[in-house]
Structure formats: C-alpha cells, structure tokens
Image (cartoon, rainbow, N blue to C red):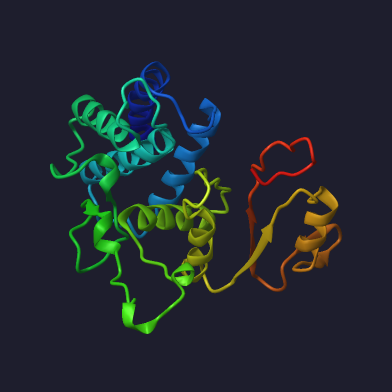
Amino acid sequence: RVETLRALVMHYVPLILIHIRREFKQVVPVTEVGMARGLLTLLDAGLTTEAFPKAMSDEEVAKAQEKYLAFACVWAFGGALAPNSSSAAGGVETARKTFSSWFKAKFPAVKFPQKGTVFDHYLPAPSPSLPPHAFAPWASLLQPSDYNARDNLDLANVYIATQESTTATALLALLLTQRHPALLVGPTAAGKSTLLHNIRPTLPGETVTVHYQASYYTDSRALQGVVEEHIVKRAGKTFGPPGIKTLVAMIDDVGLCRADAFGEQSG
C-alpha cells in the first residue's frame, strides 16, 4: 500500500509542479519544498486509521488514497494562486477555475463532483451517515448566522461566515492540529484577524492560544516575552505549556509595510 501511494505521488506531483510554474503566479513565493511539505502535512491529516479500516481491500485502499492525494495536491499546490496569473485575468476565482479544469482533465481517475471546482469540495471525516471517501461541498459546513439587524449590534463585531472563510478555517484547523505553521496572506480588512479569532473554538480543548499584535516596536525580545508567559519548564532544557496542552501562537501583521520617512508603518 505504501508503494501504491508512492507511485501515485510520482504521477501527480511532477506534472502539477511543472504546470504551476509555467502557467500561474502565486500570492507569495512558495518554494517547491514548501509545497511538498504542505502536501505531506495534508496527507498526514487525511490518511488516518479511521479512514482506512483493516477490512478494506487493496483496490479500495488505492482508490481512497488517490482521492486524499488529489485533495492534498489541490490545496498544497493550488492554494496560493494569485489573481494576476497569466491565465487568470479575472481574479483568483478565474485562476482556480483554470487550474480546476486542467486538474480534472489531467487526472480523470478521481471523480470530483461536476458542480463547482476542485476547490469547492473536501473529504469529510469518516462517519456512519456519510458514504466512505466521498467528496462533499465546503458549503455544507456553513452555519446559519444568528445576526439580526434589529439587535443594533456594532457591525464591526458581526461575523457572517462564507464558503471562503469556512474553507480557510477548516484548512487552518487541519494544519494547526498537525502542528504545522500556516500563513494568511491578504489585503487590509480582508478578514484575516477575524478568521484567526474565530478559529479558536475549532481547535482541540487542550490547545492554548496566544494572540500577538505586531507593530513597529515589535522585536524578538518582545515576542519571546509574550510566548514565555504561557510556557513552563518541563524537564532539562524542555519548555512548553502546562500539562499536555499545545501552544498555538497567532501573530498578527507579520508583513508590516516598510517604514516611511517619519518611521511609521501604517500605510
């Protein structure tokens, strides 16, 4: 079964890498090693013993492995597509549609739902109420909003989830539970900080979160001090959060703009 997965990786990855480098640009430069690491992390999260019970035949395992690999490839290699790609004059959505059409045609063995793109579906965790290893739309995870205009709430504190934010939240939670770092990239007021705030309830109960707002005055000593407030000495030179807890540090505004003539970074 390991050899089957290795053969599938050798079939998918080189073709996708060549196509990404030739036809698309990315929001931020991502090395091939970085994309490969993301692929392995997503595979590690999906290829669990719960998803592959011992009763499965070798043929069933191979088909399921290819589905998980296809899903991981979509986000590891296509998750950072930029709107100014040569094939994406209409924006990120057009870039994703272009990539999706190519992906479906190049790898027809994995049957994604016809409606939507490869970015619109995911593989749910095994459940008795769902068909095994069947794609489901991200939109199915959307929760109804309890917002009521009559409540006179401050709109700055109102959060209404969309398919895009739900997808990003689920993927971030998947990466964080695997202890894999993640980077959110987007323009000002895109909702990155709000998304970080709303991801906390989705993390396991033994997770300790630290939110740090970076600024012009941030340096390594200041950041280290904030982190050290939430860790203790365990043994020898080993430090960590108390007990069996896991620490997740959320650092806001990592990419501050260059200081202007007055030393400000507010542009």
